[in-house]
Length: 375
Image (tube, rainbow, N blue to C red):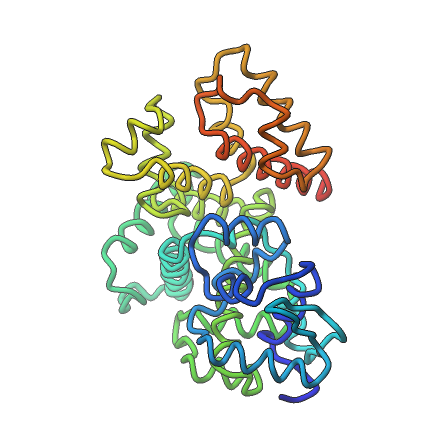
């Protein structure tokens, strides 16, 4: 390991810097993307969303070997399976731009959802590029008929809504993409554009992208792939006034694909239609705790309004004050334990399990506080 660290090394150091008494097992599950609500909540609570599932191919032996090397170089201390940050590993200037990008709950999205959005966006850009050069015959970047249909449907509906020609629409899409890249660093531009194909332009291979990263290795390539795409999606959604077409396209995909697992979405829809958790579990042959986890997963990924909807839905008016009292407790003392939360509130009158109320209250307070800070 050199004095100039990789993104993997930096992620290990930053995580141990932000989380007191960080267990090595917790960090490993975070980087691998273990999809449990405890790991997802851990990422949200400690501002580590961008590291979730960024290294899906990471092996335990390599992880432990890197920690051992970082310890010997004075970057970390390890005591009883817990990590403590010491001096910060340096990053090359080109790689440091990825370590400081802020990513929100979208980072916790399901892998299949991210893959579909990526696949559809690459196809959309290809269509825009070919159309710009009046090339009508070309081989699409994907043979996935569902992705092709999604792109066709959105283009047709958007063209009709805006009352423009297909060529005019494509020009506006191109402007938004270039506007996004103009605001970014040159290194990011080159790497992000390497995913796309267009008129007389082929996408870079994985090996070529790895070469661009100064031989940082397979793990960093996976890391940058996820961060780049989640950051792109987040910016297009957060800056919808600047990127109205990409905002429209991405929300169109999300509405049809969702950002969580299919099973979570099914439980959520049943809950919205008034089914109690016990009935959802029985009808779907699941444990009630699994349905609770489905609702927590949705709350973690989507904005705080979704968590509020779950928490308040179907509650009689007299329970609203009780729920708000719980939110106030967490807001005043974010580290309130579940036991103390239960002691302070008569939760038995609510239609939700006590722990679900506790976890949803935590998620709402964390997300709403970050929204206030970002405004």
